[in-house]
Image 1 (cartoon, rainbow, N blue to C red):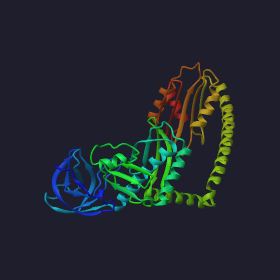
Image 2 (image 1 turned 60 degrees about the horizontal axis):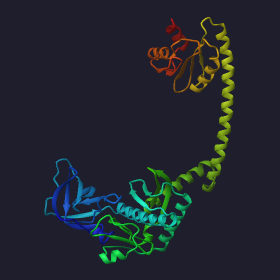
Image 3 (image 1 turned 135 degrees about the horizontal axis):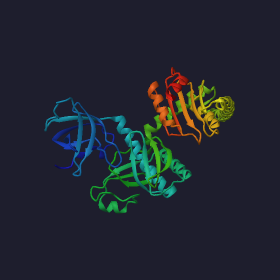
Image 4 (image 1 turned 90 degrees about the horizontal axis):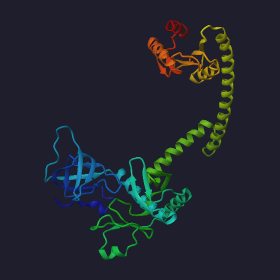
Length: 400
């Protein structure tokens, strides 16, 4: 089967076309339709496939095989047949998706060029995903200031609205071009030339003028598998993300009764206040734990079996641990504490260094009896029981 003629090579803005069904085929086991020509872009080169409608059926995916045959994967009702071979069909490409991909792919070319010029970082791979675009370089780490300079350079070229040309050069023309990277194929090499800024081989869909990209926005820099990675966005997607983030900032401003630009200052103050409050709360809890432990220590001193059983209202797991830690200075102590929180009754069982009490086994039996959960090591165990549990009575019954 001969390679499919790809109409988007000549006009990336061609979204409506006519084509004839050449064959029914399969791509990786999925039935597909092969046309004599198509404006649908198949997934390749890190760019996702176009979606749209073909002959009244939804195009859910488009792929290309090693022979250059484009496979259209359609959404059909159960038992519905593919369009007959020889049928003339009308195809309509999803404009918003195509337009977003054009901007993202063109923006990626420009950012790759700028990173090479500004930071000496050559692109080794790129991925234009549904929600995130990434660009991996040959450097193990990237200087964020250089990346910011590259971003500014790209947007300056966008503002200049330089012409973008897509063409198939002759071998002589190709040899004279200052390619950013070598072609991955040896024949039918397609070139994307962005003014005098960048020249590189690519089969994707691209804008015809740099202003159509709108903007390129770097979202972050990180290390990934030993490579410096840039996370970025461009075009309609970048614009939508900026609107969403601006909306969040305005909402925060209203919540804090300040302007959007003042939100960072207000948040910084709130963080300082929260740190102070946490420190004060921690100190108060420590004093409360010390006070509670002193009271329970009196019970421990009077007990014949060095056992302490108590329910501490409002106490959570952290408070129980703090009280228990102070009681376990008694070498033979067995501490059985419970608290009360909206989530249930946290319980803790712990023993002193000279005790042989099996804490984990005891709490497991208690949890089974009360319908809760819990367990742990012989020296320390924790769990949670229903709020209706009578902890002292349960301990007394199981202790016998």
